Image (cartoon, rainbow, N blue to C red; front, side, top):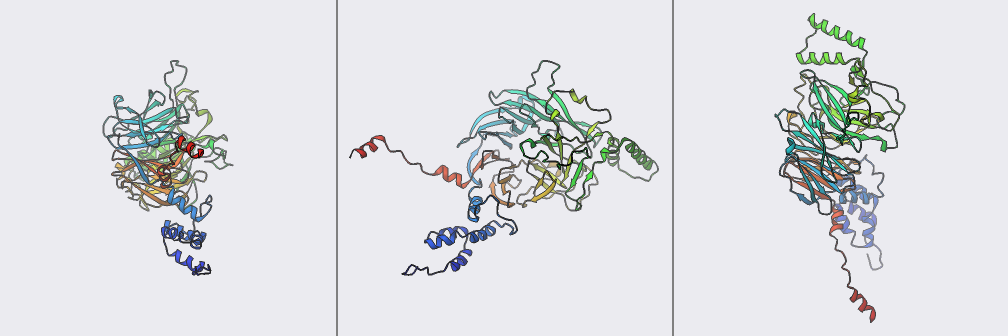
Amino acid sequence: MDEGGTPLLPDCLLYQIFLSLGPADVLAAGLVCRQWQAVSRDEFLWREQFYRYYQVARDVPRHPAATSWYEEFRRLYDSVPCVEVQTLQEHTDQVLHLSFSHSGYQFASCSKDCTVKIWNNDLSISLLHSADMRPYNWSYTQFSQFNQDDSLLLASGVFLGPHNSSSGEIAVISLDSFALLSRVRNKPYDVFGCWLTETSLISGNLHRIGDITSCSVLWLNNAFQDVESENVNVVKRLFKIQNLNASTIRTVMVADCSRFDSPDLLLDAGDQAVSPCRVFDLGCNSEDETASPALRAPGRAKEGLRHALDGMLDGHTQLSERALETRVAELLAQGRTKPPERSTARNKYLIFTTGCLTYSPHQIGIKQILPHQMTTAGPVLGEGRGSDAFFDALDHVIDVHGHIIGMGLSPDNSRAWPPGSVVADPMQPPPIAEEIDLLVFDLKTMREVKRALRAHRAYTPNDECFFIFLDVSRDFVASGAEDRHGYIWDRHYNICLAKLRHEDVVNSVAFSPQEQELLLTASDDATIKAWRSPRTMRVFQAPRPRPRPFFSWFASHRR
């Protein structure tokens, strides 16, 4: 300013100068004087800084809850859990999975060292209990989940056996006494299992029908299986679903739609009539939905089978042995598949990965769980099923045209197949890309609504590809990757905000359900890392005022 207090530089010129500076330099310049301070907080200035620094597309609006561009810039810069605060090294082998309790006070970890460890989540994380599952013939533990009231822990593992064995088991552990309450068979093991209610869980079983044809059965199990009476069910069959081309049902999880205002989260409000399974093909440009062929009438099915066999005998149809098995299985299932049921109640939905072309999971299946199916009471082993309805049809199928390697209730991870890929042999799926796509679906419209940046990578081929457990919080999505990093994205702006380094593959990430500025990552380097936001670290490290001794305060007031 000159001697009269008039600014030497007008605001418009300062604004143009500040536009050429980075965010840190703008903030530093704002400390010079009041005029510079006012210009350094200009909304248009910080809008430009935001789009330029975070490389957000200009057509993406500001977050609806944001009060200003400056505060929004600060939120993304200051609240992302990217500061490593603790490394846990109690596991002796690869750490495969992490899960928080609903209260956020505890979390569990699973590892190739065949233990399930339960941790106390305080300012400094400490080990609370370690359960060794090797005495139960487990090879390793792979997944865990707390029930709704955090009184029980579901732990899923893989049995010892041949390399190609797919058998596993689910154990229920009391979090009061850490006692093992029950064990349930689970096949294939990558069904993982999940809680349906506070005391009942879902497991899977697989029955081979042919070389590449099978049947997946999903079971509802009571967590407490010490019932002595033979008249009280501890297990009940939920669904029986046909698998074609070596595919199976995997990665089962439950979406609780009763917690939302809309009872029709997954269904159009007016679509209450019985309708066939709807397949939403993300690889097709058409908006049309296709119905499952398994729901055709029995008469048409028999006619189709007869025509197919006649064509083969006449030499008009040339099919490989596997293609013939799939065709016959499809025709036999037609008319013997129970169509989806509809309910106006606010229900829960079963969500899982599946497929129809090859053994690699490339579809997301959705099946409504009706109120009478929420308990093990009722007909045992599904005696209520009619003789003509051998299989259950899915309500919805989303085909992502890629190998799904991770899935959560908001987003899912996949590695895309090359454009135009055709699956000629179900045992030889198309090669998958190194880039991992993060896809987001609207469960009401069944449409893909957002595709995140390809910031993370994977390198294993189809037959060695493993599951990566991602997580979602109010504002962020996190995922692991084979490039030795965890990644954090912003859900609104669709941008990668942080890379979290490990020494090996990052298998699992987990946000605290009570504090999204705390993230855990688990890796093949046998460690678990805790990450906090810069804002949280400043709060923890701020010097606390020292209390004045009483006698000093009293002496100063006597004078």
